[in-house]
Length: 395
Image (tube, helix red, strand yellow):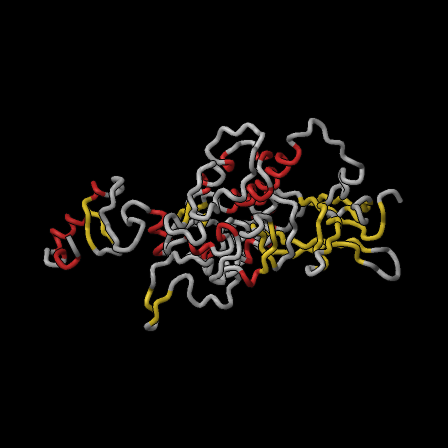
C-alpha cells in the first residue's frame, strides 16, 4: 500500500491503519508490523544493498548526518536537495580533514590517496616515509615503497591492486570481503583473502600464488596461509597481503572517541611481537632498551622524511625531567577545603593557587586554577600537586 492510496482513507481509519503498520520512509510504502524485521526485505529499494525494515543501523546512518563520518570517503547519507543541489555527507568536503581520529588506521582508505593509512602497517621491517605507501611489487614480489601520489590514480602499481582499493568496492557497501584484485583477469577480478597461498590458482596470471613461499617446511594444514594461527610462519610479504586484503567492515555509526590511538595498530603491534619472538624460548634485553624512559613514553621522531632519519626521545610526565625522565622534581602536596557564608552558597568563586619563589624574581613554578560553588562542592576536598620547575627531589 502506498501513500496515494492511504490519503483516500478517512482520518479514523487512517489512525487505526497506522497503528499496525510500519512506514517505509524512502520507498514511501506501508507494511504490516508483522513484516518488520522478519529477516526478509519488504521495504525494497532499487539499486540498494540494504533494507529499510531490516537494517536499522544502516537506516539511521542513511537519514542522519554523523559528525564522525562526515567527509570520510564513503557516502552514508541519502542525497538531500538543498537550494536545488543534491547534498550528502560527502559534498562540500574541501576544507574537511579526512585523516582524523575516526579514520586513522581503520583499514579503509578514507582519503583520496590513502593518507589516513600511511604508516599504519607494522607487519614488516620495511620502513617507508610519510609520503609513501607500503605495497608488493607485481614484478619482483617484494615489498616496496610507493609514492602516495601514485595511489588511487587509476593505474595499478601494486600486487593485488592494494594501491587501487576502489576497484573492489561498491557504492554504499558496508562489508568488503573480496579485496585482492587479479590484474588482467578474464574470470575472477576480486577474490577473498582465503584464496591467497592455498595452492590453488584463481587469478589468470597466478597473482594469488606467485608471492607465496615455495616448498614450505612448516606444518601447513589450513586452506590459506592467512588463516594459520601461527603468524610467525608467514613471510613479510605474505603477512602484509594477508593484513591488507582481509575482511573489512565500514562502520556506519561511529561513536565519539577520546583516544587517538587506534586498536588495529595496537593489535598489529601485539601480533608482531608474537611473530618475531615466538621461536625464541628466551630473549635477553639489554639495559639500553629496558625502561629507557623510566615513567615516560619512548617516542620515535621522524626528523627527515627524504633521508628516512629518525631519533628516539622521551616524553616525560610533569613530575619527571631529563633526557630519559631520570630526574624527579620536588613538589608541594596540598589538600584544601572551603567554607563560605550562607549568603554566598550560590556564588561561583574562581580560585588560583600558585607556587612562587620567595625571592626578588618571584618565579612562578606552577599553578592550579579551578572553580568553587558551595552548593556543589561544600564537601569536596581538593587535592593539588604543585611542582618546582628547577628543583630536583634530592636537593
